[in-house]
Amino acid sequence: MLEYSGFKKILNPIVNAIGNHFSVNSENIKLLIPETAVKIVSEISTALEKKVISLKIDIATRLNRSILGINAQLIIGGRINLFTLGMTELKDKHTGIYIKNMVEKVLEKYNIDIQQIYSITTDNGANMISFVNLLGSEIEDEVFFDHNFSFNKLIGIRCAAHTLQLAIKDSIKKADFNEFISDARRLVKKLRIPSLMLKFKDVNTKRPILDCPTRWNLYK
Image (cartoon, rainbow, N blue to C red; front, side, top):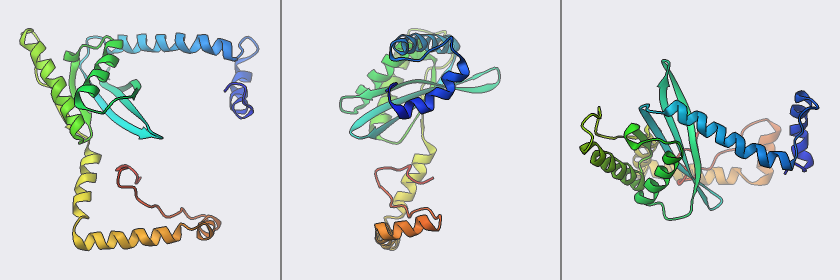
């Protein structure tokens, strides 16, 4: 990738600003990326050590690949801090127990004890709810043997945006709304033909959007 002309155009201004004492090539990048990754993991581990944290977890699927994203949020010095702990590819069925196992592997990488977790924010998927319940049960089992721990119940938080989307989806299932939405979709499909799309471009107008039911966060 470093040898591609397009990538070089992006990278060259940065390299020139750094100066001649530093060069970017495939060999030193192979060395620098792992070293930098280890350093970042160490810094995040130190920041989260013995701290109460909240996790935010979501799964995105693109081009037949599913990625599990895990963020940790906590307050440091009176300010909210957010750390990305991992973007892990999922290669098995997205069951609650599988998600739990994958999350625990990432937490172990940062030396995060599950008892540090105060809450987890997820979407409303049954697998995510199952994952939170499974992890919550594990925390309660550990707390049973540790009477010094300050709280013993994991709080599962449903994503507000996803909850709103589900409520809207239920509302538009009504016959009158459904007919209106169907008419709008047919109109958008007709407007998206190449000749009309060029006219939208000529007048600097955004192209009409066709919704995708499986992508609840399509609209912004």
